[in-house]
Length: 132
Image (cartoon, rainbow, N blue to C red; front, side):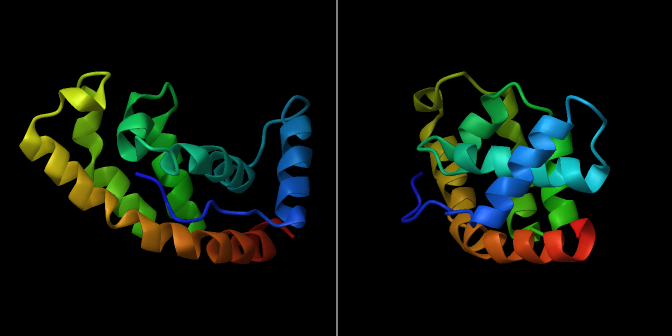
C-alpha cells in the first residue's frame, strides 16, 4: 500500500531525532523519547508497498512500537496495527495470502491513511507537551 504523500518531518523533529539517536549511545532514552524514535523509524515501513505485512514480518519489537504509537496518541494507527497481528504468523511473502486474507488486510490498510495524515500533528503536539 502506498500513500499519496510520505510524511515530511519538519526540521525540528529531524534535529530532535538525530540528537536522541546520538544520546542513546550514552544514556537510556526516557519512554517518551523512545516512543518518538520508534514512531519516526516505523513510519517508512507503514508507508511501504507491503505496509502492515512488512511491519509484522520485520525484526522489531512489535508490542513496543504499538505502545509507542499509543503514547503519541495515534490510535488511528494503533487500531490497524492490532487488527493485523495475524500477519505475524503468515508467510514471509504477502503474495502467499489467500484471497480472503488479502482482502481483509487491504480493508485494514484502508484505515491507515487517515491515521498517517494526523500523525505529524500528533508528533508535534507530543514533542511540545512531553519533550520540551
